[in-house]
Image (cartoon, rainbow, N blue to C red; front, side, top):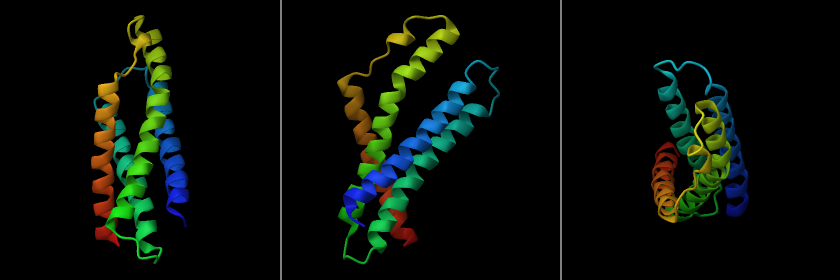
Length: 139
């Protein structure tokens, strides 16, 4: 498969899985919080952000086209970035829901700054690197 196709397919899968996790989190917003819920949601997010790009990178490495670590890393980074962009796109929806639950207007006007977005891309880079490492070790 072409690398751009891998990025699109696995990025879409990651974005949909992350949207599902956010949907579950939104359902849990109005209920009393248990101690393990934030940990469980955090673990699900980390698994999605590591497993999906690792699968994409391992697909690139196993394709037999002579692709190396660099190409696998770029594919994993692209997948994590698409997942991140889906999260950024869903942020206003989550903020409005939280604001409605808590009766505050401040959270409804949440907008990430450019520095926060760049920081998120740096974190995407780290997740892509770790995912590629996992794919190389598993492959």
